View 1 (cartoon, rainbow, N blue to C red):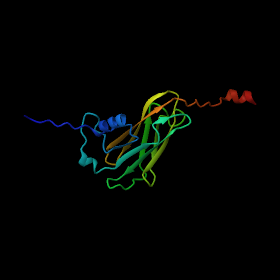
View 2: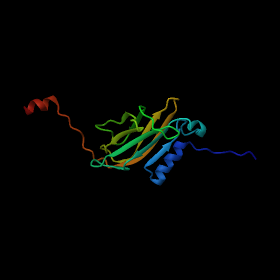
View 3: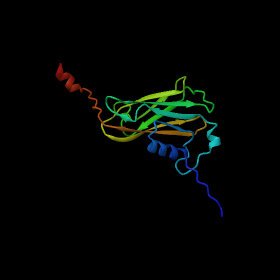
View 4: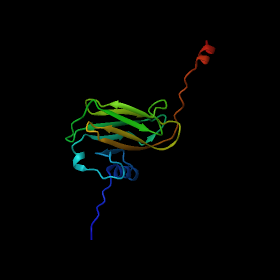
Length: 164
């Protein structure tokens, strides 16, 4: 009988662990192949590693979450001056901004602040990095928001003129 091996993509395994174990940290060596293909561990070992941490999995107006992405070489050395993107569909990164990019510092860190937004519910921040070899790495970080952020009010010219 011919044997069949099943290999799950790392992104599927990590997402499952995040959902089941309530992890606040995730590491994805290479999720660029999507959910239908297996990850080549030998090839992934030659590329930079992306990890991400969320300070709290509950986000409120008074307690936003800090998200820190870290880039390192396979040997663990920090990777500076690389662009990391952060995206979300729930909550925001300031005044309804849903996608931001940051450069890694000398320690390999890129940090953003996740605000609660105005819609409650479970959400995810996707941290993404495309390495010099063109390999896309993604780390999903799960969170829950109470949607308690107040809308930012910007005075219009009419209100300014009427106030004078």
